[in-house]
Length: 562
Image 1 (tube, rainbow, N blue to C red):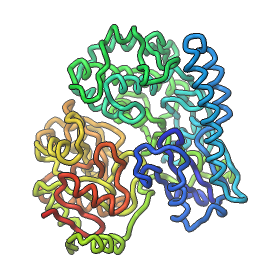
Image 2: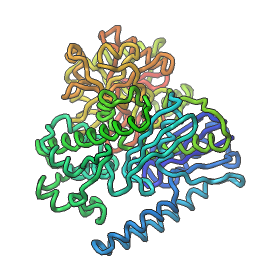
Image 3: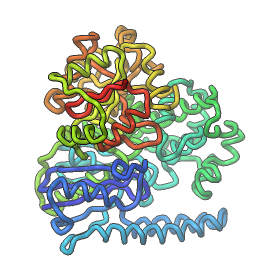
Image 4: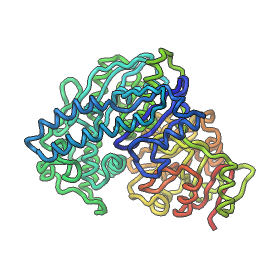
């Protein structure tokens, strides 16, 4: 049975293909169209998935979509009516938008069907939960999904057993932690729904000076859940960032918002630190309650908030769960996987047989394709006998290297297929990468890719972190050895690299260790700020020549700048 899953539509649309219970392909539309956070119908992503499996739309038995449009209308329109008196023009416009948006969504999803294809609109948060649990290594687990909003739900908790998911408790919009964190993101001069990771990085440079204030906004309930004091917010009845997310009450207390391009002040750093702290404390309390309710030892998380790796690291250290698994595409794009697997197990009754150990599910180009492109573009290159050793020599020599190998990763993290690599032992490397290659804010940290069996030597409590979704403390006696990946708070967002899963990348890091004495390299995504991660060889070459990278290792070829 061939099942196509569709993730996202308002933003971050994606497609995934499950054939007879195996995840064959998954890709976000943005990687193919080159429009960051591309929404709409993911036609290019669908085409890639089908081409990878040698299928046509006629061969697709079922399509699972990331949201139930009629449930969304049934939940959102009545809520918007309650705000009509406060904001009649916006409320009326919003309701009209919802009707048009959902009609276009339904029409777009129907356009993906073949003659015999059956279309299924899945409930948003259970599909989120399925995207994590049904491909996890756990037979049973507690489930938590936290994001901006689904049909109307914002935080959803449940439990998974075998192939079944059971809802336990949820909280609806506007009581949304995702909305709160996006509001802080907007207030600090970044793009909401895409730049939340900048707030997470900035938080380490501040002190939680305003934690008590924020704890009055996000207030704990006696049952471990939370309430939000809506008097501090305006976005639930006014149009988002155009009118501001926060009410006059918030602005009077914390001052005017930072505008894009303005200097980052200590006040901004402290607000970021306070927001990060209140998010972590709120989720910790929620997990304590969920653990008591389910008696599960393991937890699966999904939703955009689950991409907050600083929070995830603290949850791993301090929550009562022994193991936590987060799907690498935890946002709306990853729902494509959950929708497809939910349908597979529901329709076939089959037991689980697939565990997601590798996020490399996207397009790839053969060595022959790459050489043909380089020759056609008259780009000189060498083909070394030992590619990984040559790349390690370049990195050890202080060069910044683009690394383009195999299938592209699914999700926002580069994991050794579309990566920029550098030497973590050089104290100046972080600033060089930010200034000359990534063209991004100086407070943004860089992550290490570390040999899996050596990770515990450098990162406290780290044994297995293949998707770069958890922050770990760097061992104090190792921080001076790897200054370029040690964040200001003494932590690092770690990817562990397994010889079995990622052999070429493993060999590169092993060769680098022989030269510089540490079993890791800096790994950042192969793109510049504002652009998606590169997909084709042409994308890689264009990015290489337009930035301060020194070398490009693409397929079995090495390109050096004059």
